[in-house]
Amino acid sequence: MADKILFIDRDGTLIEEPEDNQVDQLEKVRLVPGVIPALIELARIGYRFVMISNQDGLGTAAFPKERFELCQNHVLALFSTQGITFDEIFICPHLPDEGCECRKPRAGLLTRFLAETDIDMSASAVIGDRETDLELAERIGVSGMLVEPGGERATSWPGIVDFLRHSDRKAAIERNTSETRIKVSVNLDNEGPIQVSTGIGFFDHMLEQISKHGGFSLSLQCVGDLGVDDHHTVEDVAICLGTALRNALGSKHGIGRYGFVAPMDESEARVSIDLSGRGRFVFNGQFPTERVGGLATEMIEHFFRSLSDSVGAALHIEVFGQNSHHMAEASFKSVGRALRQAFRLDGTELPSTKGTLS
Image 1: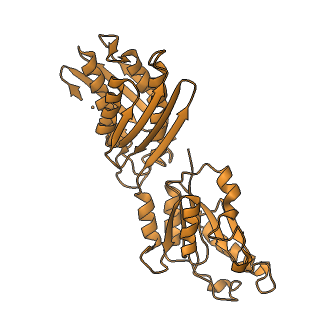
Image 2 (image 1 turned 90 degrees about the horizontal axis):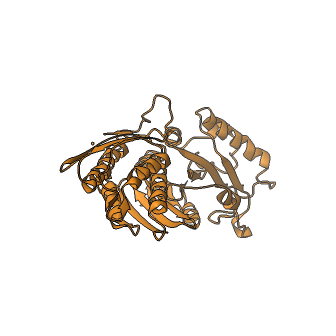
Image 3 (image 1 turned 90 degrees about the vertical axis):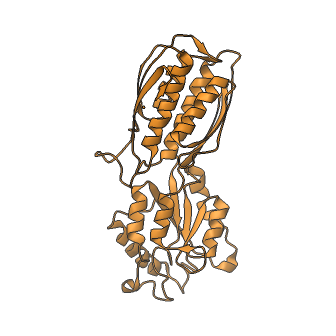
């Protein structure tokens, strides 16, 4: 799963802007209000932290490296006592007129990190106190937020936590093999739009039912080897959809976790789900026909098994009836309704006594 990264400026964002020639006076180091509880909460919901800072003239006679390191080590120790650590620390020592590629808002300092790290760009952000921080965010393709510098785009650390915690949970997957080419995007916090195209009309209709009754937006396109049969299309769509849903769930803090049932005329499907992070599938049902439209009914069980594995959920389905169409539709609708309950946010705690859902 891609990492949610916060690229955080130091002076004015983590600590109050030091006065000239006072970077080594530790008693004058002041944390920006609200930063400690904010970072604790953001770490709890799955964010990792990277510090990126311009330090004009660092290493020169006017700004000896030893003076900076005295303050920097003190700052890092303050955060460390609260369990807050930084994966990487990037410092540019050059002056503005030197034209350095690693000076913010240029992104040279981050070249290696961006290349080596699988980053969830839609959930990550640059947090700073200057317009240059917003420019850096734009250059690397993430959101940018300013901490209380004044102006319309400024906010506080509690405000940043509130925004990031309640941002849309979304993800996109693209998977190409010799058998299928698939693109999927989901947003768990939007109920539309829904656009599905797999080349199997009835399967499209069933995927639309999961999205509609699950309460999430879905865009899914699949071009598969339907000249062979529907197996690869159905299986690979389940894998991609499940992976997208799992990624969109993120840390799973605040979710309902469990979801429970729908009748369809003479048919009924009973569904239980647990977003435990561990795939486990149980199916009980017998379809009276071999096909519904262009979909082999044996692939319905296979779809849900693959979805259970890829999303990381215990999924139990029991379906009975006399009409294969109704039985299939009841199953897909019921799974959607169960997912709706399990995806719903209900607080901020992780619903697990183990401290993990993976």
